[in-house]
Structures are given as structure tokens and as C-alpha cells.
Image (tube, rainbow, N blue to C red; front, top):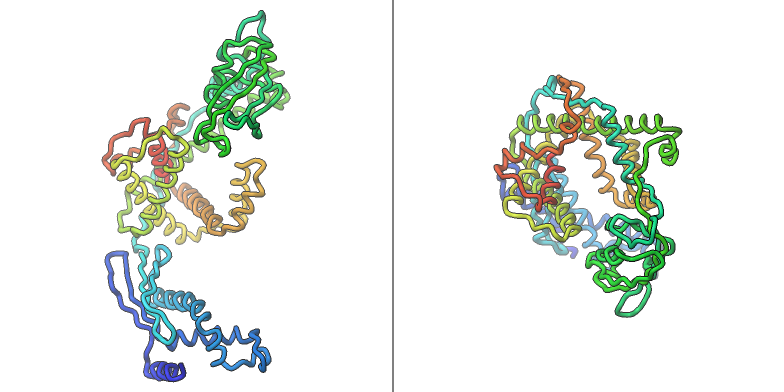
Length: 484
């Protein structure tokens, strides 16, 4: 080991330094072969061995006094593995700085050669960010769709509310149940193959609207035609994708006691109904509904304005984009669609045309992300920790009762926390551009404002036809992605 070290030191004096060879350079994609001389690796090893020596115990030596060669003999191989990561990271950062690269993503590293007393040789593949000129963003022409709230809109919203707050009254006579009736029942269930009860398979005094689809398929249908006071044996099969894995796909039997049959009654919007919902009177309820509609319409207005703005930015910028970023974005979109498809077993797999459309979407999102980042940096737009914390709180509020779990998740996963920063940054840049834009208001109907438009921009670019409703998961993801 000694002679090798002397040789490397001699090489260092003669100017033997890290070597960098560019293997490939195609557009934004680069591949380099990097050789770190053995003497540099040994310097890392020596530094690490000295740290280990501070606490290492060896008979006959006080802590921190063990000779370097003895440390090397005892811990050298173990330390070498630790040094590899440090050496690669240091060399990578130096090459990036020397080459003045702006990496689009984390470089891909592959170690070719590495052993004690030898040079470290590794390859580095990376995509760099493109250089492009941002368009003039002051005075962009944006149309602001505005919808007025009429009394009929409030009436329609109240009608929707009453649909979810129906009343009921006991039926008159001794008729049997029919679809739409509400039954009051007790039920006790068990899995058919082992006659065993499971959690959630029994209840007392439970109210169920027949035909509402609240229970597993087949349960409600078997209670139609029954009378109050009757008993029923209901046989069903839990869906294969049922949430409780111990019940998924299994046959079950429920013993049901029907106590009462009620028929649904429409709720009447008046002071009493308003008080049931926690308001002082009908006027207060109508005022609250009006404010909620105004908030909903304002959000939709901003979304349509944002869509116009992003279309302008997309149409006005054409430059090469890092394919690694496109691939990562495409994988994210595809994963989202696959997740939705698993939740909807009847949905079909993506077609070739849909996959091509998603590639266009991924490219659009990456290009817009780069443009927005460039604008934001030029305008010194930042997202502070307080804003990030509010975003975490907003996410937690989506899961009532599980807020602590959400907070812990983001605390333990810094990368996921950073993922919340990007949309906040984007919204701040968009708001900044709106302030500089030439905005013209246009009065539209509620229907036009709330209309979920097809992505004409993408259809024009991808030259694909509209998809059928069976392709809902793909279309849904496409629309979501197109908003950026």
C-alpha cells in the first residue's frame, strides 16, 4: 500500500488531476466519463480514517493515537465504501461547476471502476436546462368571464341542498317496501364459508334508502317487497376491490329485521329548514348560498383566465426541452391515470392515440414549467415557509380526523413537502402576470362559465379526435394536466 501511495503523490506533483471526457453531447443531453485519480480517493480515505481514529479502540493505544497505517489495515475496506459516495458527489459537483451546466434533473451516475489503490472511473448522464428568451409579458390580452348571480341560481343551489337533506315520514297502511323507501332495520352479518362475524357487519336502528347504492350490490334489492316487522335473509358477495381485504370477494349472509318503513319527503326551504342547517333564518341561508356561489364562480373565472394565460405562454415559446423531464412528467401522469383505472375496473386501457396525447401534455407542462420558473426568477418570486405551512394545513383539512397523519407525512418526507411549493410558486407568478395584463371583462352565463371545456389546444397540437366517455380516466387526467 505504501509504494502505491508514494506513486500517487508523485503523480499529483506532476499535475495528474481529475480527467473529464465528454462521450456524448446531443442538444441538451450530455454524457461524460470522469476519472478521479487514486491519490484523491486516498485523501478522502485518510480524512475518514482520521475521523474513525478519534473513537477507535485498540489495545496499547489511547483513543485518537492509533497509527494511520494500522487504521488503514483495520478499517480501510469499510471506509472505502463510504468514501465512494463522497468522491462521486464532489467530482460531480466540480464538473457541473466547471462546465457551467444547469442540470434539469439529478444526474444519472454509473460507477465503471473503483477499488483500493486505483482510480475511480464513473459515467455521468444529465440533461441541462435550455437557454431561451421569455416573451414580453406586460400587456397580455386576457378575457375575464364574469357571471352574475340571479335569484334563480340561488333557488337552484337550494334545491340541490334539499336533495341531500330529505325528510321522511312513516308510510300509511301496510304496503311492502319499494325503491326510494327508507327502512329502519337491524342487521347481523357473517361470512358464508366460516359463519364468522366481522367488524362493520352489524348495526341496530340503521336507516337505509332502498336504491341509493349505499350498501354492497344486491343488498338493497333483496329488501324490496318486504313489510315492516318481517325478517329477511340477505345473501351477497363483497366486491373483489372491497376496502376491507378480509371481506373482498367473499360471500356473506345478513339476517335483517325490518322495523319501520318510511317514505321520503321533500324538504321545504323556510326558516325551520335554515335553522336545521345552523342559520338564523331563510334570509341568512340564502345569503350564505349567494356568497358560496360567488366564491365558486370567482374560482372558475380565475381558472379560465389562467388557462388563457398558459395557452399564450405555450404558443409563444418554442425551444428544446429536456427529455428526462418529459419522461418523468409522463410517468407521473400515467401513474395517476392507472390509479384511477384501478379504482374503476370497467375503464379501458390507454390506446396508442391516448398515449401520444399524453406525451404532448407532458411536453406542454414541462415547457410551461420552465417558462414560469424563468419569469418567477426574473421577478424574484419566492415561496416562504409560512406559505408552505399553510399549504400543508390545507392538505390536512381534506382528511378530517387524520390531520396529524398528514402533518407527520410531510414532516418525514421533505421531497413531498417541496412538491407543494411548485403550485404555490406558479400561482404567484400567474397573479403577477395578471396584474400586468390587459384584462377585458365579458359577461357570460353561469352555464358557460362552469362548462368543462375540451382541451382544444391539445387537440390542435396532437391532432387527435375527441375520446368517447369510456375513456373518462384518460380524458380527466388530460384536462387536469392541460390547465398547466
